Image 1 (cartoon, helix red, strand yellow):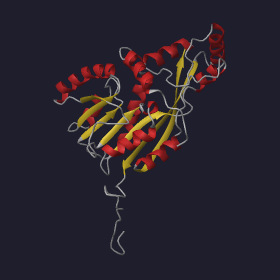
Image 2 (spheres, helix red, strand yellow):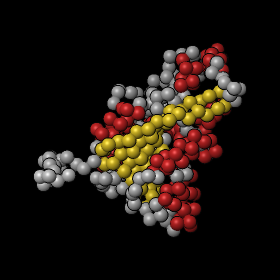
Image 3 (tube, helix red, strand yellow):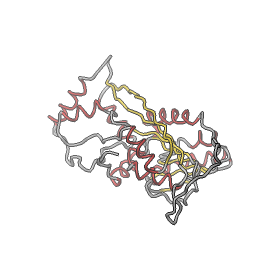
Image 4 (cartoon, one colour):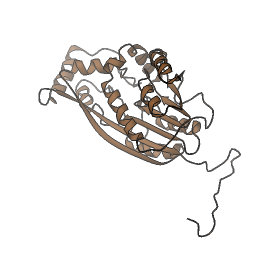
Length: 290
């Protein structure tokens, strides 16, 4: 994977703590991508006993997950306590509906508090962009057994390209994160211990009447700038005017577009090539066997 600057975890966590009360009302994109991620599960035959919703946020996916896999134990993991507090309400509803409430764990996705091979399905909707993907994949591989499934969505490099271009008119500081290319994610999956990754990409364009509307939704969902190289001061009025003017140049049909490149991926945990003491695992089959 190409070298990239990773978001500051502390800054990202603070943003999501502040956004917890407003998240559900503004999470239009997140809900749409979640529904499409579940569609990617439709052709896959799997009966997981234990599922981790990695970066579960307010727990919106719990209901659909419970209906799809009513016998499975669901565990929601997020690094924001405020988000998990919101998820607790959904967990209570699921207890009444399915007699089984999801567990909630506040933890770092790159250092999960689960035993090796203890999870059958890791599901993650639009959380990977806040992580070091190679670390998150390696940790997912650790908690999955051979044949366990990782299913995820994340943001690709063209996300918010209009806003990125507008900010470039104001200064050279990064205002939009550097998102990872789909092909690099596929390579990281293989390196992390997964086999035959399947990667797909699509573009979703939201429309806004003003730049202020887009900025509101980004803040309300916790999508603030956590790049460690970001400017620490406020923009001058002249800089803000440049940003608005540049974004207005992209207006089409009376609306301002906001592009989101959505990357979907899934892969199965590969069988280990070496055992714990370092010896290599070599498979044998009879001559002529398929």
